[in-house]
Amino acid sequence: MESPAALKHDRGPLGGYRHDMLDVKRLRTDLAAVQAGLLRKGVDIDDLTRVVALDEQRRELGERLDEMRARIKDLSRQVGDLRRRGEPDEAEALMAESRRLGEAERDLSARADEVAGDLRDLLLGVPNEPADEAPEGAGESDNVITRVEGADRRWEEYQRVPHWEIGESLGLLDLERGAKLSGSMFVVYRGAGARLVRALCQLALDRNLDAFEEIRPPTLVRTETMISTGHLPKFADDAYHLERDDLWAVPTAEVPLTSMARDEILDEADLPVRLMAHTSCFRREAGSAGRDTRGLLRVHEFDKVEILAYTTPEQAAATHLDLVARAEACLVALGLTYRVVDICTGDLSFSARRCFDLEVYALLVRRLPGPSRQHSLSTR
Image 1 (cartoon, one colour):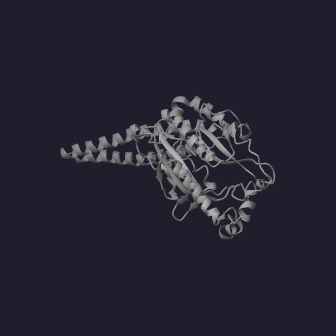
Image 2 (cartoon, rainbow, N blue to C red; image 1 turned 180 degrees about the vertical axis):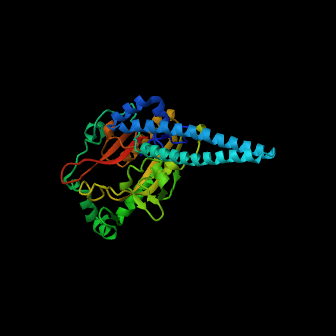
Image 3 (cartoon, helix red, strand yellow; image 1 turned 45 degrees about the vertical axis):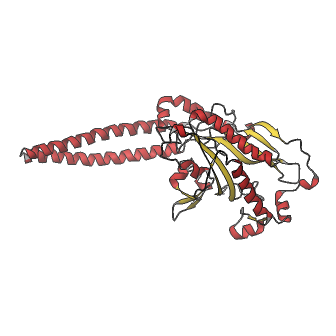
């Protein structure tokens, strides 16, 4: 679950915590702070130097284009004056100069577009900076376990069975037919299993109806919609792409929910805007084959309820805590054992500024339960 997307009025509604890319204006005015933040995330900052150089080049080309276009416009005005005064030879000379400038303007404009494209491509590859409050660390082993709930529960021997064995023995899961229909890492839910999936999603929706507007977004979205949340180009290999229509299967409802207000200006008085959606989600899980992939772990298609909010930067922290509390309340209501993990800077995802994982305990092998990451709550 993502935390609120904070408003930034000069770049549309989603710029503050994370929009489609880092705001290049910050690099002009506060480069050292951005570099320090990205170093905390373990990111190579060499590209930032190139970003700054390309931005300077783009602005220089823009100034030259403005001057050239102003000169062409002035020449056009002078040609008109000369023709009205009956001086065709002088007018023709200025028209020839205008044509030469027009050709140069087209070449310069193409160069400016090329530089702007290179700059955008680089910016799309720069991750979000971590929040000051995010704990320091280089990777997963440095994440901070803030507390564990339900750890004092006793586990009987009959409970120490992997979920894929329970699911198949009770007729809830049909992994064999899932693979037959769609390939490995796809699942067929049957009978009570299918009803359980539907009931869990309904529970999550019902518990948040008091404050969140329910949305049913499309499952397929455009490329720019995926870019707007940082899923492209970074995670193209993990997404399902329909090349014929240039549409992407959503990896999470966060993608369409975040983009609903893309390129719009929201009235601050209307914030926070809280949205929720239940969708099927699709992830290729590239590179995860053979690693925690049994049963329902790392499947390619799954159902999820997303709760998301647009806020001002000032509202973001409190709204984020509310999102965490609401997700945690679902786990409490279901009587599940879980722990709350504060994700360190080196393990934060590409777009996240701050992230809490609620890790529900699941039995993966015939041993005492261990944590299995089920749900994350992060700040963009």
